[in-house]
Length: 67
Image (cartoon, rainbow, N blue to C red; front, side):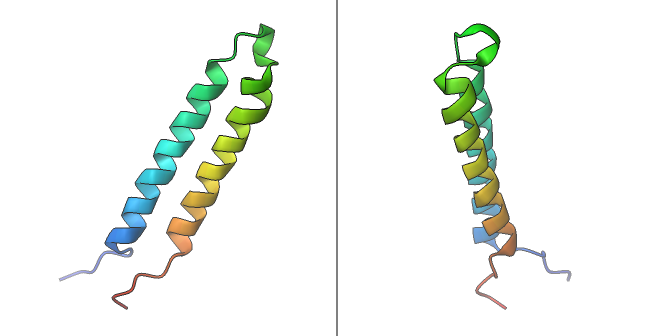
C-alpha cells in the first residue's frame, strides 16, 4: 500500500488556494478601465492572486499530522 505524499488537510488547502487564484484572475478581468489599468486590474486582483500563491505554498509545506 503506497501512502499519499500529502494529508487530507494539504489537499483541502491546495483546492482553497486554487479557488483563490481563480477568483483573483477573474477579478482582474472585471476591470472596465482601458487595458485593465484600474483598481481591480492593477491592485486588488494581483493581491488576491499573491494570496492564493501564499496559500498554495503553505499547503505544500504544511506537515501532515499523521506522520
